[in-house]
Figure 1 (cartoon, each protein chain N blue to C red):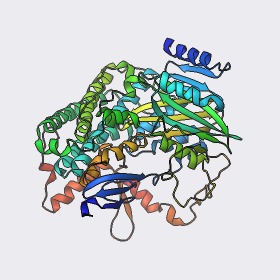
Figure 2 (figure 1 turned 90 degrees about the vertical axis):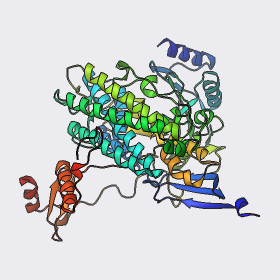
Figure 3 (figure 1 turned 45 degrees about the horizontal axis):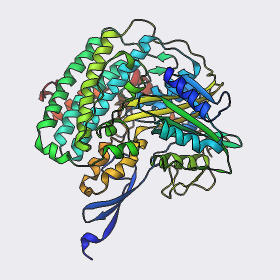
Figure 4 (figure 1 turned 120 degrees about the horizontal axis):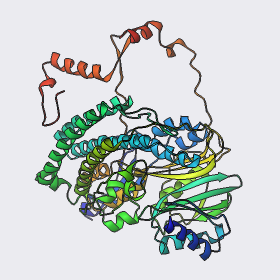
Length: 410
Length: 172
């Protein structure tokens, strides 16, 4: 028996460098080729559904927002929509617009983050540096609008907690314009740069039939020609009041998944411009009861990674009887083993990364301990940015001079 | 609304469902409750004849003596049928993995978190509880309580900010 016929099983995970989240893959290899993959998940199970049953709806809103570190607003909104449907609460128009604006800004930061991770996984770290630098613009904007970079705390039963001030609208548009320029640059690069095209083409193949059969969702499904998007199919918030294209692609590989996300970014900029132009005046929330009546509802939400499904059952008290969360990554896991089959081991990180499994990015508030005394001082992100630039300057590296097209200064 | 009303009528007539078993919640949400004996038949019809070929997830419920199951089925166009059934805790339901291979992970969740018995579920790694989780403990059952529910209250001064540090933060 030659070495190429021997099957070797390589355990990858639960802790390993390719992914920032714990998952376990047992990979059967024949030479460099993957024969089969067995996956084991659950290492991040934190009992949030049980936790929700023991807390009030308002507390749950904050707990559910922490299901994911990236699409936190997606989970918070998916949950609250179900609660509002049970309670029969009609949201003020302005609140639905604000929810949609935050949702789309979240999509931008998520997709740009993904593009950077994808670049990193294929050894194209310049792309990581570029996209994550661009992404800062939307992170800073989200922090200005909501008070935080992720976990925005914007939702409340019956509306949103913060209004968008009129003077912020040109600020949002400025970021949209700048990021649109950058995205055009990435699309230009993505469609012309042969190294990138050849590295991603034919990698992690998933046929349309398999995508449908395995219940794949989001950009992963759309890159296999599945024409589905909850924002269009079962509109929520203010999506029925804007027009946009659902981006689908028939490459059925990682390259296609890249093009879909880039195309979706362009649609998001257009959605944001429409929302900001049409946003009506008025209240941002209605008063909601503390007790939610008996009843049940299912809410669907097109998160950056695919559809979030939340089921909520109320029993007439202040606490829900049952909360069920289905995040898109769970729906996409089955397609991953299909994508890996017959592929090369070296493609495993980018194939897994291409479904965009999520990992956490948290607040940038930093507590500095000066010396060993333990006396601390707290810095906001603006101060941290200045501190970072100064720190590098003192060591001979002036980051403030670096300019990238459309990217602004440090 | 017409589309969903037609669906509701079709299901209740075809399977002679009792009044109240089919509820239209809104234009894209239909709730259908069926007896366990006819679940497979209604499920088969919903998937194969009505074209509800997307299984969004399966929700488990602890209903006292019974476990409740909701199969959230969708089709292109946004309509969702939430097909409900129930089954005594000691008895088993049939797997739907022959219709939806992706049901595998949702059914394993029901097994781990509710102690549901799912007949025909292919063997595979459990989900989502750890391998060494104690036998017979199912966290989403209503009478299951976590061993520790409260974090111990901070007692030592190390937990509280010192007054100087608090002042320092304000002055900056």
